[in-house]
Image: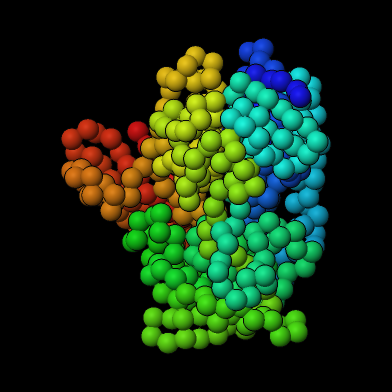
Length: 414
């Protein structure tokens, strides 16, 4: 049985931050991942997604500027070439990350980690004991209890498509659907978003989302709101999505159905009960110091922890720093997520930092709203951007600015 000061489960941003920080302080550290090393952001999330969005944005930009100095053949998106370009970023990551851990003196293990006691983790034939264990395993697509769920394509699989189907339906109206639908539309596919709520992107102010919806519909993306997907049916190479709308049921014929209906912590296989680690739907239950409420030897961060933080890479990075500090000096630091921005990388993008208007009102804050359509500004007109606006909430009592900007115009928090 190998003994360590620290055992980290997960090689993404939160796990890597803790492992490297503690190793620099002389701790003996082991790190485990059942997937290739690197985590969601580098391999199957933020980074490869931004490669796709960057090329799609070039297509959109060229289309916006036609008649404004751009002429000639229409630029088109070459999907296979884009996938090859994307892999130049993702393919080197696992080997580079594992090499980095090993050069730092961190022991690396591949396989499914399972608790075998409060301070013991089993990985295949290996048993690891540690003074402290950090859970940072990220998230997976939420299991949908509908007939035909096996026909759903995950966001990770979407990022590996060698060819792009002509018709794509997205189940859910969050970040994944918003971003991938815009990429697909610029690649020439027919994209449909089916969302059970009254509006997508519910983490953002409603008036800004309405502006975003205008741009989305103009891009040719079909939006079906207040519609719950009830089943997915396969007929040969064709898929049929069955949905129940606000007034009537309908079907959507498509070639690909993408799961964009939310993600949950990927903690199912950890055998948490054997480690006396309590968890809920949102992840490992932790106190304000990101320490397990039931096993004081365990900490959790990023998508694995039940906190108020959004499922964002900057949140995982902050959690990793907080956990490392508390392991080194005792529980003193707590994460503050209020100033972490969030961006939907659609075309145009939608971004925000601080409180939504709805939440600010619920908290009883007294504030002034500055909101303006900036599509006629020079900065928007020169790039042919028809959909641009900003919204600023100014707290009148504490002079703190809460922002909710949209499109390519981002405002700084002061």
